[in-house]
Amino acid sequence: MQNIAMLLLVKGVMIGSIYALISLGFNVIYRTTGVLNFAQGEFVMVGGLSAAWASGTGRVPLAGAIGIGLGTAAAVGWLVDALAIRPLRQASASVQIIATVGVSICLRALAAIFWGTDPCHLPPLQPGSVQLAGVAVEIQNLWMLGAGAVGMAALAVGFRWTATGRAMRACAENPEAARLCGVNPGRMSALAFTLSALLGGLGGILLTPVLSMSYDRGTMLGLKGFAAAILGGLGHPVAGVAGGLILGVLEQCSAWYSSLYKETLALALVVILLLLRPKGLLAR
Image 1 (cartoon, one colour):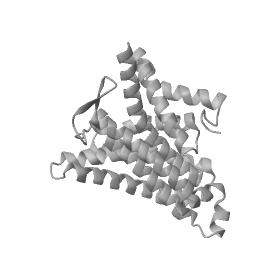
Image 2: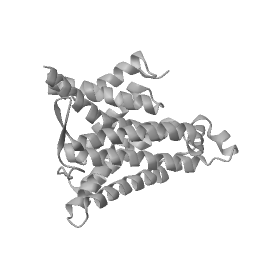
Image 3: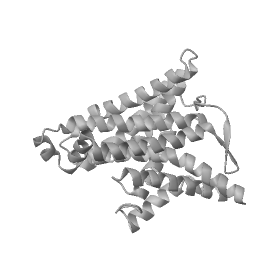
Image 4: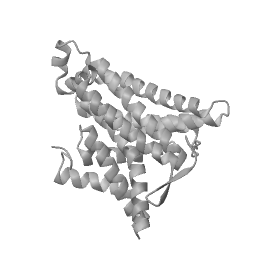
């Protein structure tokens, strides 16, 4: 029983690190524009599928395929801001949120046309496994955990201690005041969407060798990342990472009990938290 508990904990933390990366993407855009980007899961899908496609051609090494995946995701994020958000800059936040839902549908349809509907696979960044607390853990899973930790630390430092991070936060608080202080809100929004897509694409690239990737997987991943952000506290990147890890562990425990509860847990948590503690469990 102890080995099973440790196995569930390790697996939950590993998959939770991907949810944490997606949660970070939500928080980057929210802290800069005040908009919830419901196309975040599609950034994950684009990153994973483009890297798998490049690797599957047989002419691109794995490192090059990863670069293509990250570049494609970042380019898509920039285009989403330029084509869907920038024209609606003067509209309300709810209108912009609805626009991201439409973007999500469009990206899913385009991915099905370009990459097909069959799941795509990507070789692991580093094959093999190590023993961790008596449980065999694939090195690929450790890459997932490390990426989540690095992303959390970079965003926490960047938002708090860098001029660009403070400018992005100022745009969310008061765009007009930020503009009067010499900050370009449009440029900060484009940077936020690009960085958010880069984080999502990284999560997709790390996840694809473990679970494969398909055109329709991004929607559920996005919802789970949103649940992690709500669980930790929307607008708080570090708390969002903790929310992702908690969600991953809870999901693995519920899947061990019954697979029927695995996909519904994230949505149930969102509903419960919005009713009982809308600011999140870890937000002050």
